[in-house]
Image (cartoon, rainbow, N blue to C red; front, side, top):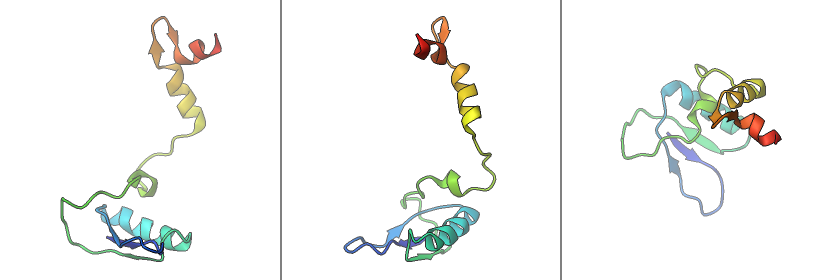
Length: 89
């Protein structure tokens, strides 16, 4: 895909992405004013960088809530105590 951000002096940016991700990104980037124009093509060049933060535009990625993050933090151990316990002491 080619992304025109509309920033003076910034060249056209080219990224690789799954077609679903590219379509969602293109729609949201233009609607939110993050990009002036996004052109989706089917050219596959492995030298082209992947779209940063693709999972934000991937409907198959499950959402991670703050509660999930805290739960995962509690399960991360550092020695005898969890990181959450250590931060409290």
